[in-house]
Image 1 (cartoon, rainbow, N blue to C red):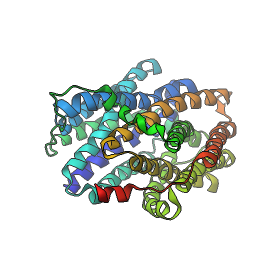
Image 2 (cartoon, rainbow, N blue to C red):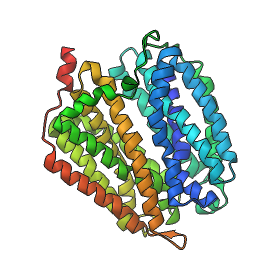
Image 3 (cartoon, rainbow, N blue to C red):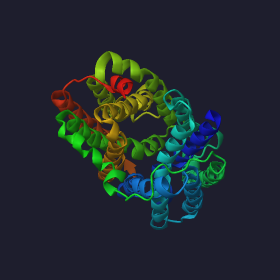
Image 4 (spheres, rainbow, N blue to C red):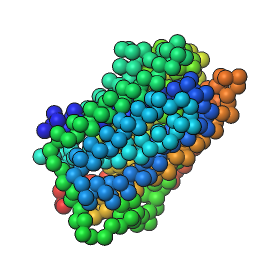
Amino acid sequence: MTARLSVMMFLQFFIWGCWFVTLGTFLGANFSASGAQTGLAFSTQSWGAIIAPFIIGLIADRYFNAERILAVLHLIGALLMYQMFRAPDFAQFYPYVLAYMIAYMPTLALVNSISFRQLSDPSRQFSFVRVWGTIGWIVAGLVISFVFHWDAQEAVAQGALRNTFAMCAGMSLLLGVYSLTLPATPPTVDRTGSFSLRAALGLDALKLLRDGNFRLFFVASVLICIPLAFYYQNASPFLTEIGTRNATGKLTIGQMSEVAFMLLLPVFLLRFGIKKTLLLGMLAWAVRYALFAYGGPHQVSVALIAGIALHGLCYDFFFVSGQIYTDSKAGEHYRSAAQGMITLATYGVGMLIGFSVAGAISDRFLVNGQHDWFQIWIYPAAFAAVVLSLFALLFRSEPITYASRERGS
């Protein structure tokens, strides 16, 4: 079972990593897209995250087996990805990428749901399944850079990155068919009961915001997603524009570090507590963008590689530790609702704002077809530093009580 679920997770994230990383570079090279248009395309991820609870809560959890809805969404995704491959301009490309992300984002929850339901001991086994998703993302980047060389400057100029959509269409078709072979995972919600939009969106957990510490963490989570959007939207165009060879492959260093820092996270939480762990994650955002700003003139430099490698520290020490903190604050009844609320606030609202801001900043510092990357990266570095400073001053240290509550439940 672990092997079957690992294959599912590998394909799930191979698909996402195959096209999303190079999307900004593709849009600029093939459609001469502005920063605002690029931000619009990336923000489809946020709209997908906002709409996903409706699909999961209203349809998947109530009427269909999870593996069947996963199959249908990926088969639809294969068709939409093929249309993205064929799109001649941004105006025709955008509706397809929007529809695709609305179909894809719910599958992130579905693969987790299937895994948790089918594993005999999820607390011990799930991490070994989920890590194959990160491996899938890494392999996608290595294939693009070192096997097909689609991200080389000459190849990008000739439109080679369009092939990533064709490859994703094939992998989506494969995962759609493979999903039908997964064990039955029937609905757990009584469909005779009334549907609660409040529950589906995780709004039942709004009561947690009465806690001043958690309210501050919630606001910081939304705000830190603004600099996060700069990385997703601009990292690939940045490396490609300054002439970095195998840019997509080098970006996989970030996912490799994610695996390493994930293993270190429990040690830091235990030894330093939640406040210092969150602060270290936010500090990493500010430092990485400063490294990009000052290392940008060089095709490959220690500063650039270090900035990419900090991705694991940035993501794990803030977002993953933040999920653990949220779980510790929520009661048993509100655990799922709390995670849904944080996901909607960060990947939905926070990233939506972030992609818009990143697009506007990129356009502001575009001169004669070249970006002033120093100015572009300084903005998220400064913003992350401000959020870090306010969080350090206002957030009170408190213990994580997750483990003790688990033993008592």
